[in-house]
Amino acid sequence: MNRKMRKPKNEITGKTEVEKALLEAEVLHLAMCQEGQPYTVPLNFGYADGKIYFHSGKKGLKMELLQDNPKVSFSAVANSKPVRGETPCKWDWNYESVIGFGTAAVVRDEAEKLAGFQLIMEHYAGPGKYEFAPEKAEIAAVVRIDIDRMTGKKA
Image (cartoon, rainbow, N blue to C red; front, side, top):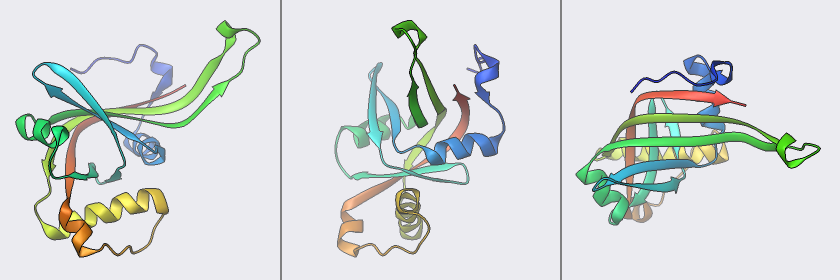
């Protein structure tokens, strides 16, 4: 499904610019499918090298759905703010958004799991070396989304 954007002037072109918009977003919305019914959940996340990482409990609906069908879609919005108008119909909204598709997998490798936690922390707290309590890291799952494609939009 490679559709053209309805308003090409709003498309964010270039991988670097799309990644920048994703990195400036605070929340990622992950969409999964449950027996033909969409299910979406907001997440904290980290991103690097075409992969998104998020953490989760090891059990629950999200993890069940990902096990049944690892194909996902995601969206994120950055730099969102209203633009006031003289009348309701003159209002607008400035934002950058990213929409993408990929395949999710629970990270089994301990080093990659810790790297995923590190990316998530860096996304919100900035560069640094963060220590994770082993007992906390043990009870959480880290999921990696290998991105197939993503597009960006700004308005």
